[in-house]
View 1 (cartoon, one colour):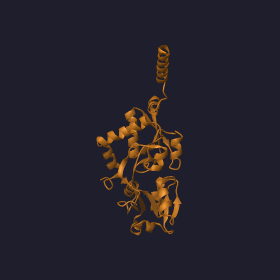
View 2 (tube, one colour):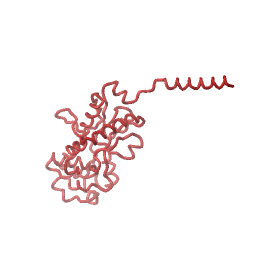
View 3 (cartoon, one colour):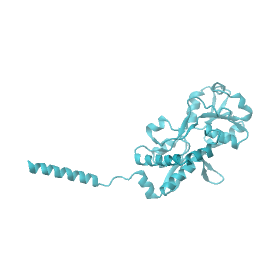
View 4 (cartoon, one colour):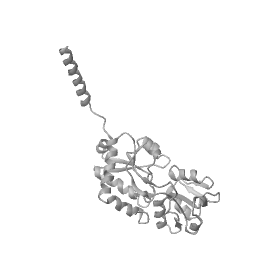
Length: 269
């Protein structure tokens, strides 16, 4: 019996040793470090989050700065991977990029199937409108928008479209594939309203004098949210790292400075 017991212990220990000595599959952090680049998905159509400036060919905005900070912390370069709002989820799940940053709303629907980082821009984001300055006094509530004679232009695939279809079923909805082109179309009279976020509204009013954001101080009820960095589920180590970077930026004041720079004193308290 003693020999049998010793043999059992020996083979048990051997099995544990063999299991623990097997090479483990590399995580995403190891993959990024090995290739020397981090693949970042972005739409490039959302001022002041992520905007591909056609004049320079460079990405601009707070998410472009956060992307650079993350890449620099890892000692790697950025490989931007263009995506769109309708394809963002599928592109992420298809592993076309490691993370995505383009003003992505943190919500339960995304968190159920993907992972999202800790929040930034807390208390700043909410649904509001852009309209022509000459029409600013016409629109004071959802009821003023939810009419057939009000032409509302939306970009497809994001939370702005979801909000418009759910909340404004009586309005005339016009889908435009290029989000960054919608504010100018509103200014030119090709539609009356753009459903957007507070940060985008404030940015466009500064850029385009024909536009106004009359409801920016009072976003539509139930629409306040924050943004997060999107990634696939299943790699807690990588998620921890991204959250660590955000925590450091929050602690040393750089995140607050970036929010003030890009969102403006109108929204940052």
